[in-house]
Image (cartoon, rainbow, N blue to C red; front, side):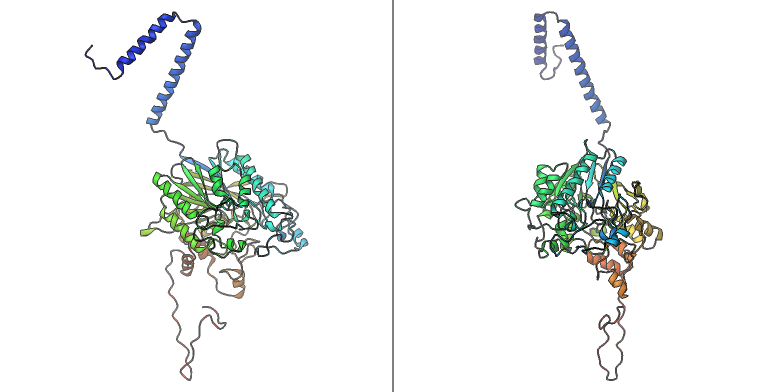
Length: 583
């Protein structure tokens, strides 16, 4: 036995054990108390050891964290504290006053308004009316329904526009302070409804509230965010954003707050997934108008946000991690005016950044449009159609004739990809003056548009191409975009379509063009092209000119021979000039 090899430390261990036994002999027999204490200690140690062994065994058998992240997504509350159920859409359901902000605001209401017409048009519902922003009862109803349907979500995303439209007409002495009160009130109530607990409530800062969760409407006047710096965060906190941050609940972390109050984007974590929330108001053409700046005064990278986004995505790529991008104003063509929502150079740069990290960004979530929409990301090099899809949530507010809506998402816990998405809506038409709206699941992706998988860019593009010929698919999409509200099948030229949000005169498809008798692009082609090719105005216009996505460009008509003249000369007739009708 003396020749048996002992492990390192054997002799030291034997000496330690001998010393312990010598101490026990010197102390004498243990008392009952000591005996009990020793037995309890031994039991605890054995239980701890068993737990460790069990943990090791479970891990060895392939234990995994939860496979899905359940997220509640709400957008565009537009709470209107002055909502009056006895007033109707002609006066936006509140007794508004004269304009209290700068006269250059393009969305100013007519004052004074026709009080009798407003009274006659009222539905009398305390839950809200089509054509008006949301009363508090509707805000509470939406939050309560979301919590009831998803009792313990892993995250809640709010993509901005807490404040009602036309804040500069609020019947108050200080519209900006009223706007802040609205933001803080909705944010705090959402935190109360979904907390306390392990929930991580996520603000996509203005619409997250600097704009994705600060939407454009969360600034008073709308889109008004002055002192934009080029290429870097503002050196000092911007006072209005500081006031917004003070009331957000749960509170922003110090690092989040530092970026938010100086105009930048904010980073959140949901399990293994990173969420990057952008300030998007600075990219809108309306921002320059609201602030009185020349377009482009913020440079190519306002607040240095693109550089920050690229750095965040690069860090995720190096770790092999994945992320979501969220904001308020979508960087694509909308479905009202069919114009690009961002300045073209900003939209192009954003698309380049996301394309560079197309394997790192899992999805893009935006609000602002008040309609449920999907957008395919541009095809990559070599025709690879694997870019991150973009989703737009319809609003809680019914001001643009949508039924109040919120979304529940299921995300892959490791990749952040959208595995399932369900739109929940309440029909205001079915809610009586005393009967609350009934919320129910409206439709679910990917089942709704099968076999086209609207969770992927390739599937979304296929959906857009198919709806050009598939009447049932086309009507489903029209119904879904406004969550089944009355007038869902009407084109934008109809009075039944989106009361309160008509296209500005002169834009393609606008009422002025219709009344003039000018030829209009088919509405179906416009919608489908905005889905499949909505990332640049040029691509969208080319798609519409071709007759829709998947169509070959139409050849230009041959010019007719010039009319003969007696003198053999003269100028050929120029189509579209001199009052002649367009071809």
